[in-house]
Image 1 (tube, rainbow, N blue to C red):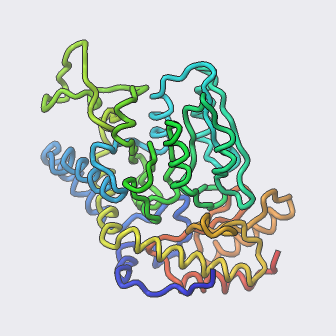
Image 2 (image 1 turned 180 degrees about the vertical axis):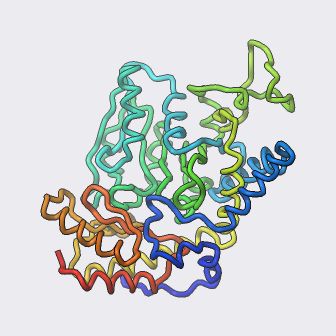
Length: 398
């Protein structure tokens, strides 16, 4: 993990699009990404159109469909495999409630490292339908335990939930292996992509995930209140949405106000999960950052952020700081965690002091569960890594 990041020509102009980088060393994208300045102009154009014209297709449905298609292209999917949601929570619940659960069915996840949104969505099915929620422990390096999941699933397992990268430990999931495991057994694999999509490459043509949801506010550098739900077409065609609205009904080119009849046909693929009306202001803002990401290319961004994370990790280890993340190469990601698995009060006080020291020196980072979390995106640089390591040298090792 001692690779030195190399300058990437495609990234040269990115920081100019994100003026927040002039004010902060911004290592907090795992909580929320910086928004490009161009997003403000895009939203203003949308608002001017609403104010002066009442809203034209170019800034509303046309923009919405453009954003849907650009996200689909980013992840190697078809546009009709992408639904528009408000956030990850809505996307998770859309899939969890679409299955015809029966008492005795079970679902599997690693509760210690998954987000509460996934856990409570399954608990809701437990309380409503008698679903057995099976939790498994993480690996020794705090990653999703594929082998343990394989031993835990059985003929009654209907769903496995995992994250592309865990928000608590920064461990990257071996999605190829997990997807193969679930596909062989016709188990729905539902993935939380919040901590990686836009920074790490994921191609649905190569990795047979059934469903994945992501909000725009982190590595897509967009607003809150806008997100995507990917559902593989053949899986979506077997699902009945738990919530259904007019945009999920196929009436051809009929106006959204048309009712149709008592019998209906669902929209093809993931579009059956669209509930509308949409966050058009958010779509206009998000298109700006999607274009920036596409201009660089996610593979290039992944190369960049992983090289920064490796350089930062090497520096932290030299300082003898307790790095929790990246102990196994296949689980290494762009998120670096400093802390202990079970920090005591004294540990938490020391980590809080480091956090306060960095914040006072205009470094943005997160502190979660008594651990420091540093996250890298395409607007970060090796110079910033070296600056933060220099600041940390002024603190006593833990």
